[in-house]
Image (cartoon, rainbow, N blue to C red; front, side, top):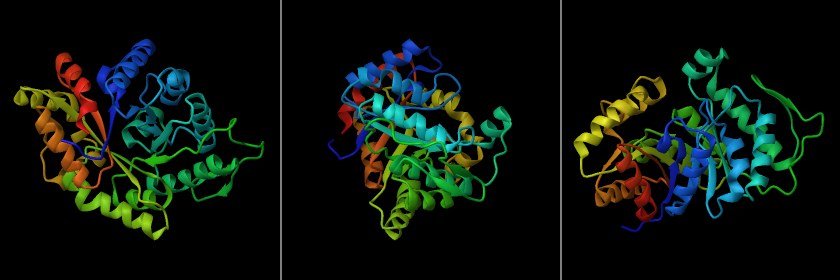
Length: 308
């Protein structure tokens, strides 16, 4: 089935915890499979922008994105500096996905108060956009302060960097449409995308005089002839997302029990039909996180590039 979606792959979910060399090998393997975008999350192992800066030039021809770099622990001036460096290093192919993450990670792991995430994100994107576009900023907000007193400026001749925001809640979706270039979602099925997220972000962008936003739909994917087994593996692998409030609200909105009910499972034709449904809902990209047995993951990765 041919449709206009761009196909991307989440690197860490292919590997699980990995060494630097393994991440590089995975990026090269995924690029060779013919996908459009390689997405690197910010977990607590390999740092996403550092990885892209280090190896991006050795992996030509694909977009390189973060999905997503966490904001509370990294001031937007620092985020801009890292992004501009990575953008120059990878030859202008970076898309910067950012998000406030979750209370569990921000407070529970780092002791940083998870306060006013929508206001924090609005001000964060405002500062980040100013630095990336103009080389400087002078901003005093309710929760953030930023002033490029020591002369922040673009690195070399870095190309413009698109900013995507992990936007799920209504307030986050609206501010993303107003200020950013699009969104990266996770665990939002075609119904939630088509009924709420896409119409809301498009309306906000139109009201702000901005272009139609990019909507990157992140979902686990397993191409398999054992759907029952894959569903059980999804329960084991992704059950935690049913306990995090942001994703729990999405699953309730979709009217499903757990993450295993929104993952994409089936043979190649069935997956193609599910991807087409995401496209019909307004998604511009699939961000696939291959899962399952090692054989299923390899098969999924090998066939992803042919889904568009």
